Amino acid sequence: MHELPVPESAIRIFAVIFAIRFLSGEAIFEHASRRGNVLVFRPVLGLRLLFGGGITLILFLLSEQGMKSGELFWDVVALGMVSGLFIVWPCTILIGPSSIRETRWFGLKRTSIPWNEVSFAGGDVENSVTVRAKDDRLIRHTQYHVDRAGFIAALKQYCENCSYNYPAPKPWVPLGAP
Image (cartoon, rainbow, N blue to C red; front, side):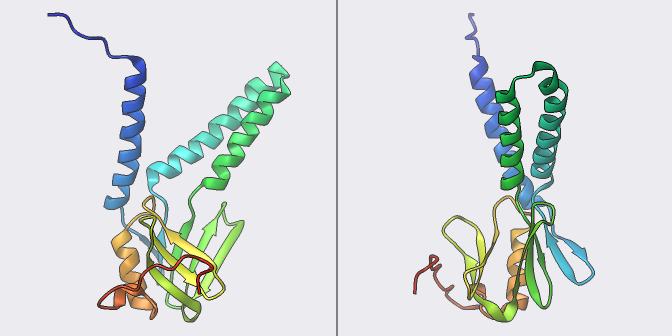
């Protein structure tokens, strides 16, 4: 019997699909951590390792090979890749009795929304849970954050404008809509 060869591209595609499914599945099984009376919703561990390892590896290769080759183009491409990974790194969300906070870019960008300033909290069209302030600041819990059920339970507990507290959830309203 003659076996068909498996092309390398099919193996790579399978590996990428498996990695994406693993990361999104990991979010279901991990739970939020607690710092005192604050719940901490981080991105899944696999995603943090992937981004952190990617940034470290690119910087290492840039320092080792970039200096030797002397090609400015590849140095700029590598720095662009590091900047891209740094920018798209998912935020950490903290929920406490007084507010919901988001820290991004290793604490360089912080967003805080007190519960009395929340205009909407609930599911949106991107399969995320969004908290919007009256001045349109957003904090989003995506499929790549841990413990979606715990996040919704915390919203129900602390936020009076949480759509999950109503018998029929309020519909999601796009930004800028009246």
